[in-house]
Image (cartoon, rainbow over all chains, first blue to last red; front, side, top):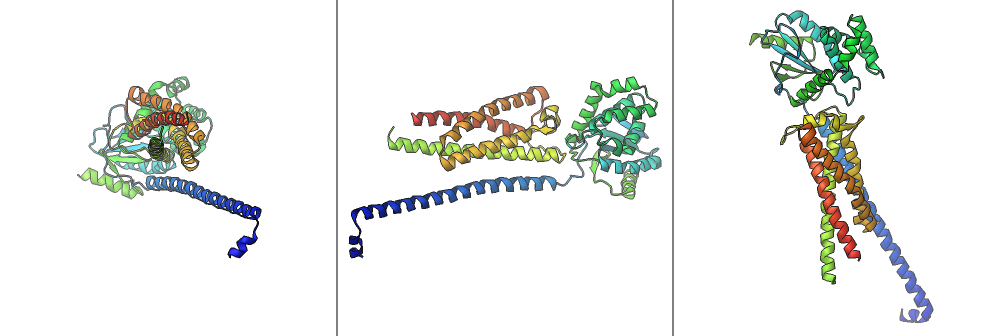
Length: 245
Length: 153
């Protein structure tokens, strides 16, 4: 071995050492790059896992039945049926929500069968994040209500939901509905865009959020949140139970 | 400055960067939570302070169709990336850019705090966490910036 080393000239030994140094540097740079990659992949992994975990947890949150209604029923709430009844079914709903439209016939049936024994209340809970026309629809119902036709507009909005839900100018449609309900159009337009209508929808919305409403429709029976009935029979059963208490 | 002082300063420097990472990560998570809640059409549930509903449902919670929390997600993601880059490469420019970005974050947080306390009249605990974090991040970044400059000089 020593003999072999002796065979190299001084210059060759220098070159050899230089090459070794270059190799060491390359190795160190490779390790550093790998370390960097591991750090960035680790950080990206942690962030992605956290966001995925959040989405999973939030979307699997169980709606809590039994929560209490935060805001008591007041005169400005839209009520129908027997206003003196002790049994009050309150609905937080969004006119653009397809599930609310699906519940509409059930509630109509309930009203025709139990309207003389229970009080039914409607409050706005427009999910504006996904339903751009829900808030204007709420204001349209409020404006119709000023002329004594809240429930007529309420029914019409649900029955025609698919024709205005994705309209760019849904308010034009609402004006057409107001015309078909024989409302004073100038008054309707002014009321629909009034601060009072905006405030009413917004206050209902905040009250719903305070009461733990997470989606629509959400029902409160005598001030207590109930699990959404899956069909008319279930709805009828909970109302019957409340009436018999 | 002797080598002992320098290494002690470097250690403090590293701890501050790690604390900044922790604050940015927490704020990122909270902003992501609020964004997820927003797009799922839900309202964040509050346990410590009441008022999340008012704040989350107020007109100030979004810019057009975009929730403010989404801006927070990207902002804190950017801060995190710059901090990790600095830790990984020890590139001072990353720290300088980081400090620069904390300035608008600081002022926006002050505006959001003012909106909550004085305009909306309700406080959202999640927003409070993010706003206070932004303020702390700003002061820590300024300290670090001055410290890095001092070290350089």
